[in-house]
Image (cartoon, rainbow, N blue to C red):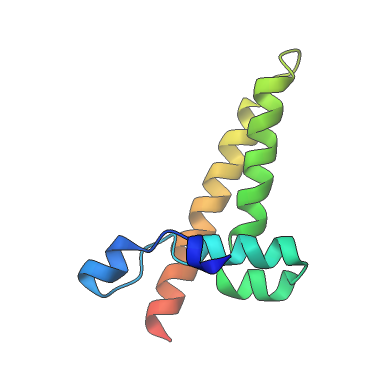
Length: 91
């Protein structure tokens, strides 16, 4: 399955990882049931999946307002991505 994954153009052209590096492989590990491996590959995988589930609910269930949850999850997700990115750069 990894041969069908998109390459990171930032890593290919500039030689450094982008903020989203590891997302595809992490999602694949999550589908396979390797939760620890998925977290180690991309720490924001769980909040990303939760974000997209709430976003899907927002489009499916029009009777409820999911805006606060979407914004909160987006902010939490962004913080996790930025912190883990700089952690990876320093280690």
